[in-house]
Image (cartoon, rainbow, N blue to C red; front, top):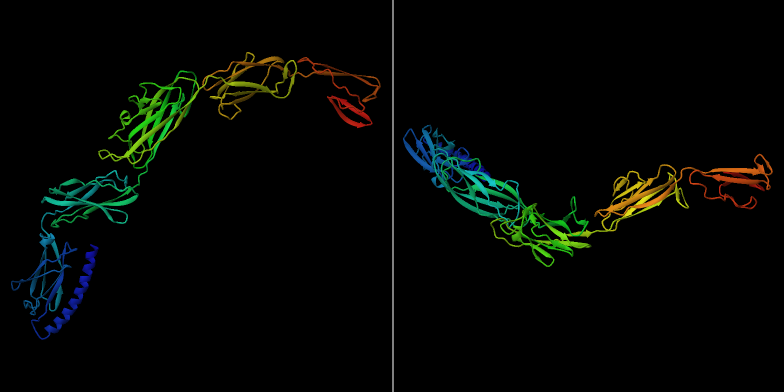
Length: 580
């Protein structure tokens, strides 16, 4: 329409110039001739007042004389006619005329016509004619593009898309046969795909149109999809607001990414390692397969699992997503679930973001550590119903470790200060007692201790009371209370495999009572002053653990060292000592 508007403006400019020229000619020519050789009429023919009526028949009738002459519109819908005597009928100014324009049937405007009335001008006159139709309106157009959705993200070849659109016959009178065209353009507006389907619609009817499959290239690109109707000759009795519908879609380049994980049930959760408490013992494995790629469909999925030593498959234990399936084929230590057993042969496929879970059981038949590997292969293929072919094979080998543990943990006890070791280990209620538990295989799960016949205290790995941050190791500290005398600490630990250590015990002498010390001075003495002749007699008694050391000090005053338990206050020739 923009092109037509431009042409119309140009045409008007040309006609304006022509009109001025003819006006000058007519004025000059008519000056000496009462009838006048030039009496021009001109104007445009327009369908619905908007579309130029191109190459149409124009009848000019003098209703006063009953005479009719004709001309045609040009490529811009413009006409002109001289009513004067120069190459014209010689009509006189003021005579009544009717201008009628008929639609061009070869351009599908058969049923359109328009007319207007006027008079033969003295010089020139401008008469536009609007063409209309008297038939019931009918034309065809695109109602909607149903698939794909506007703004959709699509996957590339080998996937395909069948564009689906709705077209309609808007009229109420005529059955119409017409082509519906598909045009697909890339981001540079280069047409990359086209197709056409011919349909026949009764008045008011609509239908769904499906085009040939479109296979987008395996590249990231934006596309515009256009569906339009293209009637050969719709008669233009009804002009839809638009003949075409368009949508925009995005295609992502394919990314192939199959994620596989192998785990074993660890009593409360799936893990990559488990320790069994006894042999034989049954464990459950899980192989998860996730299609984590973009625009990649996985088919022909097969799983190969390799057993280490000490593992035997349990017949009838295989399930896929919780549904029982057949047993794998077993050759040596290799278990193979092929696509037939897994049900992953075409037309089955694993869509992107979907999961498969293969679970099965195995018996642990011997002590030790064994690993278990899994390999998964899959084909990437086209959509259901199309030709399948391999574009990539991906393998992953996660490992599961199974540990057989029959050895219990080892727990040791130690003590801090204050302490005194003799016939017993003497401690006070301020002396810390510390338990350290280790297990070289599965780790310590908990430690238990109690004093005499007291209530047992349980410390769990990394739980309250465990001062050791390392998983599987426990360190806990406690203090002894109660009456002075001998007390026994009992303790043991258990590992994660359920092995329990034999109960250990350790005696301690709790002594919270200090000794009573006496001193008796004989010889020269005046207050706190004594001489070298003065004799000191020390005595000590203890109602708790009893006295242990009976030598308090053994050096003399002169030149001797400070005995334990003594503090030198002053020394200048004569020493002054304080007994503490």
